[in-house]
Amino acid sequence: MSDPQSPAAVVEVGDGAAIPLRSDHGLFTAWRIAFFGAIGALAGLALFKPDPYRAILRFLPDGLIVTFEVTFGAIALALAIGLVAGLGRVSRNRLVNGCASLYVEVIRGIPLLVQIFYIYYALGRFVKVPPLASAIVAMAFCYGAYIGEVVRAGIQSIPKGQSEAAHALGMTRAQALRHVILPQAFRVILPPIGNEFIALLKDSSLVSIIAVADLLRRGREFASESFAYFETYTVIALVYLVITLFFSKLIGLLEERLHDGR
Image (cartoon, rainbow, N blue to C red):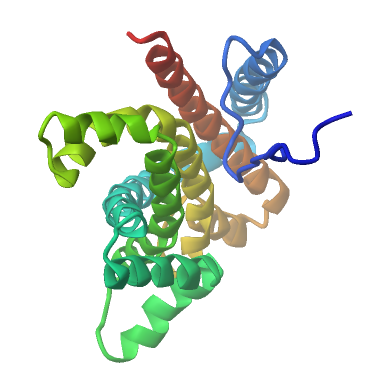
């Protein structure tokens, strides 16, 4: 019988993608089947039924580029916001800590779609923000709150003895954080940040609602002109699957290299 005083196990499930590691044989096999199966399905559809699948694939590249612009622009800004928020959450300054905590709680309590609408339409009454910039800012502010909590958890996961040893060597708290704590925390927070990146990539489809010509928006335009809704959304789903699985594998490889100490 387990000790009732022992801490309960924590199960963390993100909304990104499962990271395929070689140690998880089932997931790694499933990743290969899904990834190469999706590529094979796209190639087979374009080869054996060029009308309309080949036409759809020719119509989507512009939208795919915009999807990447939104995703990478938002994640870069979200990382900066998340780092500031995470440091604020562990700050001893009550005002800084309170402001960071308020930001995290408010942003995480509002759906991303509402935030996109708010920045584009509501703030647009006072400051005109282009659709693409609105999408990047809204997604960055939303995911910055989640990344801030990841950074906070990563910093707090480092044993206090590390900080005490740094202080014994004459380092200030800021120097210990920069030179000792954050480098170690990076290894801890990389997997969840990778998961947030993939979740952001999938959520980028929401920006099509404000006329950003991303992958989904371009697909909707093609479907509305050709009425090939089933075929168009089949291709879009397969493309999203391929790029999501591709990046999840890259994150898995990076995680394995960090784990191996290389």
